[in-house]
Length: 518
Image (cartoon, rainbow, N blue to C red; front, side, top):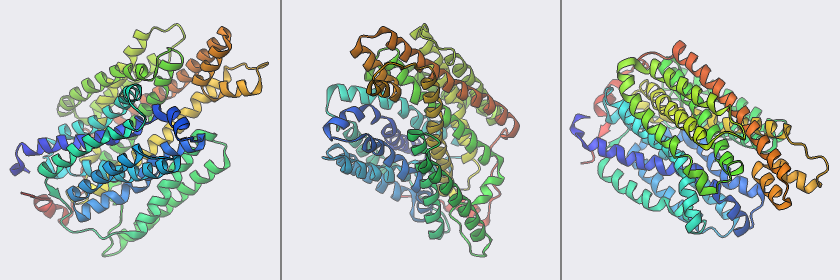
């Protein structure tokens, strides 16, 4: 590691670029959906799959991506994934039909499935245990910043250019990341090439895809939908079978399972992963509800709603900056618990929102929440990564990200259902034509548009009040999760990273895991 000198910090910048572009693609597209509906003549179902094809493939391929990086070289596969992501971005931008765009988005998800875990998996090989928390903070911070930046960038692009620009913006960033990774990042791989657990790859991908698909469907059609419930149950059963399969493989003398289940013997790995997933749950709930609040209640346009997320970015940067220094002194347990406590304060304040709440108050609690996210997420992620040996850092990082991705998808579905149920409970639409009432029930944005068309101040006030009630209910649930996070961190997260016992192969990798590329 030391022979890499300052080059490893420049290489970290290349990795941050890689994860930023992947994070952007999760949120930058949402604002373009109304334009796509008219330009590509896309149905509502097709628009849903334009968004969900990316998430579905991403979740399904994370685990195999990490293993393949350990086996064939993380730098090599990262370069291939970035190139694939860039090509798919161009195809998305010039797609002439909804079907073509959905297919290209699936390919984007495949590229992202490799970029995310491989960007994290090289950190244990490049940085010492003392340096790693700072490296993780930078990488995870870049990912988190990309989410609120997406709506801001998307709003600006859609204001000035055509819808394909939200994909073409990826291309120069990808080109820069390719050059930087090629020149700066050392190659790293497992000292003993892990065998490809084909059965594990197929079963885990099927289970993750089923669970993610079911959560997406439940968010769109309700948790009582038979298709959604069937997919969730089937996905969960397949993942149970996957765990049994991996245990059987690990008991063989020459067995090399896709997932090293012994990782869960480390409290740092287990609780770091769980707590990072809880943070993702709360963050995606915020990004789901608050931009809608700024538009439906505050009257902002798409770009204005994005710009009002800037305090979140400021809070994230402050929190992440404090987290690195605080964790060195107080340890991961106290830092993560403090992060959740700050999150709870922000979310609790947000849950008191009414139609009379000032915009300054809203921007304030969003900034406080951002600071809590910045404190908790990088520290929890570093606790989990610190338990990984260099030999299996790819597979381990992929497992962390797979849990987070599925957790975030389920979180959006659950929180969306809570918001919608509370929103519907405050609507009184008796006497309105069925088509008008259906539009109001569909979303607050549609309800506001209908109220303006009818010139009905009463309907407008009811729709806005109902949405605020729904957002408050969502934020109460997120606040309760943050309070639970404080208790879980204090009860179970070790003060310092707790590594899984190393094997002889792991010890060999300490010297051989980084391969200089000259």
